[in-house]
Image (cartoon, rainbow, N blue to C red; front, side, top):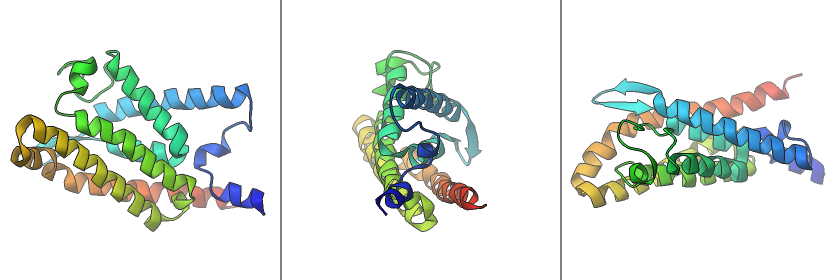
Length: 198
């Protein structure tokens, strides 16, 4: 019974991880590195929606957190932030708009920090088994999205004021990010459904 409950509340990545030892740690490290590559590619992939370019990065954060769970998901995001901090061009505006800590303290700083919290919220939901249920996962991702946007708005408001922060840092992204929440909340449970089929 306990084993069944443990299986029912583990994220997708648990299916690919060795049970213990150095092999498990090495696999987790490899997955984290691959995750940072996915985050970098998603940051550089832009979709034109209205007056702004929207990256696929929030979608990538949602999917990584839901698939990896909280610990590995947050570790992957922290590794990604560390890569950016040392000057690797992993963020959306790098190297064109600067690199390293200077870029991270710029207009996107609040959103970047929010990605880590987003991964914690969604990853925690996955650890509880919510990644099997589209509605539960949607709700968790929506909360994570709101928290991330609030952090981005607050930091940007310090730099350019609340009115411009709302106008340029929140409103243009609402529709696109809601679409990404819905897409991610549908994809992960769909993968679980496929895995359950004989």
